[in-house]
Length: 532
Image (cartoon, rainbow, N blue to C red; front, side):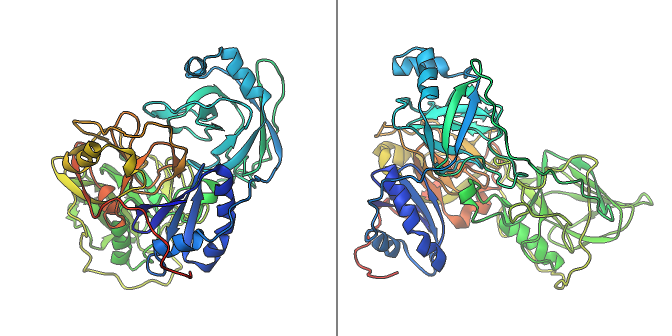
């Protein structure tokens, strides 16, 4: 085993096989129950462990794990599912060429061999399926696509899978299916789970269809009041709270507010619980009609706040202060001057139902209350015991502009040793520009000199964390943010320290990033502790 650093509260255990990974996953359930480990994310030959650094350290975890029995080589067999596929994928010809066979032979191998789900990750409902006999082992694309359609059937390494939602991805596309492998409204949202047996069939040669379990769509919610009406949603306005920790088993990442400190400040201004959902407004341009008296606050990225009253008066309001609004008022947030995301909260909070424990919208998973659009209305909770308002909240960050250089502390690992010494030096010495392809999933960065790998073999998919700096084959980093995939197949050279994640979520396009390592890359040792 190897124990590799991921962040100041996370490590990766590297194992020799998928079977060992599954066995160790089962053995770690006791530590999860004790509360020392907060979450585990199994992958092909690794397990990502998030732990509480106040109660346990990485070496203690490593020492405990090396003593566990991981000799089991059985993946529990589950339900059998047949998936019809139209084999028309963009990469089908390249896959055949790489394997030195015909396209028909690729399809034959994919349809004549049974697959089994080993684990789930990357995105909700995304199942990593293996077959010991299919012989369709192919590398990922040199550079991931920005968008892959939902239902795409794909190959990468030893795995096959189906993309549950439209999302970025680097797998080789060989076809598409109409089967919905993820539906939040089904009793069991994910069609696949570890152990599920999967048979693919060529839809052009068979009429086989998979009949999905019934999904119960929610009725439209009629609120007793429409306290706020959206007049302009700007570039993107989402409901966000602290996010949904502990949902990795469903393939769902944390999501939540990109600048949690600003979210908490907005709620403190108003006397709300700090995790109350607020509107996360990207780059300003938001306006709303106020239909009942309320107290609001705006924090985060700096913008001009203009109030227009029903009598035609206009005045400016301050950020990080309570703002009293009356029936008939209109509030407008101008375009941001610094930073990216502002937070609009109301005293009492918004009347919205959590989905899988959170009111956050995850842009990759497409889970949570839908993004707001013009004409939408929101109701406010009025029956709630609240704290006094606060007049002392201030910005915790120096919000950057597009001309700034932002320094982010990083932990090197887990795959720093996959890169040349020059690449590691370049990571921390040259500046990385934030490109327009960036979003809540991650910042796509551009540097003058790409980062070269020393190890060129395919990396089996493994867990990733918020802040992970993933390096695709083109050598240009992707800095994962809140809506990142749970697992990925490109090596991660380092990760932004937790205390700089709010800042990372506020870096605008064209700004530059300088990475500052807080230590050297070093594997963990576990030999000096005897207990957990």
